[in-house]
Figure (cartoon, rainbow, N blue to C red):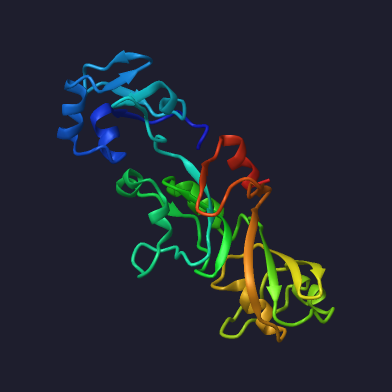
Length: 246
């Protein structure tokens, strides 16, 4: 979702990269009159197209709107029990995507991960540059989690987490300052700016507690919509993406 000049691709290559079939199969769709642009049948599979977000509104393939063109970002409400992986056994987050999206090139990838027992806001994109911007430690993109704990807070966690001196077991660098907002005896918001493995769980373990449930509801200033049910996804606009870095 860059503001730079849009890329230009041949129609057959674009649709093949988007999972509509091989280039030969896409050429067959065009010959059959199954591809339209602005209401007119496309007769040339070699035609070149500027890849813009509006293309999915302008083009239809076999009567259905074109899938999101390259450079798209999806917000998914990740349910519990689903793994952010292409290879692990059991339910995988990619199985929640429409089948054609799983064969796109560039591939759709998660922006960071949520572990199997963590629910909430998960981003996916085929834009590698954007993915790396979001997860880059230099950008310090914040992520907010709601943690339910096994034991009551002791009142010292907020200062310890905010101090920037908490060293986790096995790490050689302290955790960057984080913000704790208690919600009750055994529940709190925790906002972090790093993406270390099981970071929130390990932070609470370091103060003698255990996370029983974990849910992410915000990345930057982008919130998980209240009306987006677990397992459902929503395509983001440029304005939505900008909020990630706000």
